[in-house]
Length: 301
Image (cartoon, rainbow, N blue to C red; front, side, top):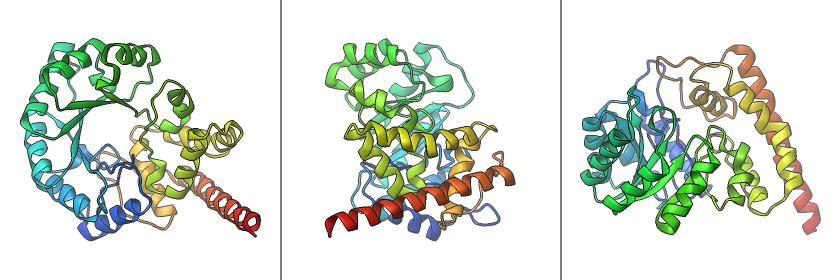
């Protein structure tokens, strides 16, 4: 799953033309879905008008791929933006935890039920931070709302995930959504969780696809090589400051020659040292792609 970054100009205003190019470039690499206005898309900083425009552009430029729009904030805004995303042609929703509030399970159930009932399209709940759904709560939501079809797990609690699999069976799709999901992708595949969200796909789609194929094909040596050389160091950079999980995507796009502008406050840009380190990793990844392409070409000859 690919999460387009929302493009902003130097003054922090939404840049629709740049965003459209970014979405089209990601769609060309055929991820299983596009998720505009997600975490990497800075959902928390968007106005409802910007959100609706972002959804329309993602649908128009997405080359027919499923578009799953991020929604969240409070229940009123979540329902309003959910209806607008459906009107814009989105195929589904990714519902983020409610803003700030650490709710009881009954409250999370009511929040997600309200969003599900506001639309006719499929709904995926994002279970993380202040909105972690207990397996029993997710099962109750699935029973009450036929369009609740998936859970994106951001906690990496395998005991809870296996419990949910036991309760829901094939009723719900589970997606690996932990930060830098590639780190536990092999373990998730072994547990039958075969889809994940990739921040790296936003700025190095070819490289991210190569890693996915290695995990899918069970190529343990290649998985370990790419983890050691790239994904573990990237995770180290991401964890250095609050908000870097988003800032690193914008920095990666800039360093990869696909600039979509800065992050919006209260996020901060990568520090110069961190940006330089990320640039070195991106250069290595591009060289690795080129080496593999040469090797495949020589083997074909």
